[in-house]
Length: 246
Image (cartoon, rainbow, N blue to C red):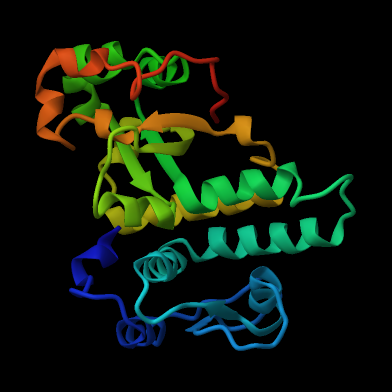
């Protein structure tokens, strides 16, 4: 995320106000998006965004600060997520709780990662949980033909202090090699349009629609990844059911 280059030493609302002034962020209900501490108005988080455009943002909180940066980077997708939540809130669910659709949407909102690759075999290894082959045996191909874009604001917060087992919930896209050479701003705008469109079409409404991705397995994220034995750790690199990608 290019905005990370402007990240302050501590979270605050001043930079968010400055960045927001250069963009026209809108919800799908047409409200202009602003980042403010939540008032005691009785509204839930998503409804306040939908009806007022106010994203509840604590001034001294990294989690909320990163959430705002994602709004600024993926405005269409965040607006689509909000609309999906509001739609789900209006639908009756059996029993108690938020329902499967909202759980899945929250998983991506908090921990989402977008993986793009011009080599379908790399995406196949990821779907098949073949971590050692993907991260170690094919690491040169990863550098050439695969990119990861962190979407989840909770994941950004966790990356401040990475921990063993840190896992993202990934959406997978096949692209051509020319796409990987495009400027980051164009790549982000394209991903924003794709994600928003798919959310509006009803995708990613089940947690199993998202592919687990052990983030500390990516080459170079931690010095431990320079040792092939690192990938023998079953706690981080678990076998699993083949996920579903796009």
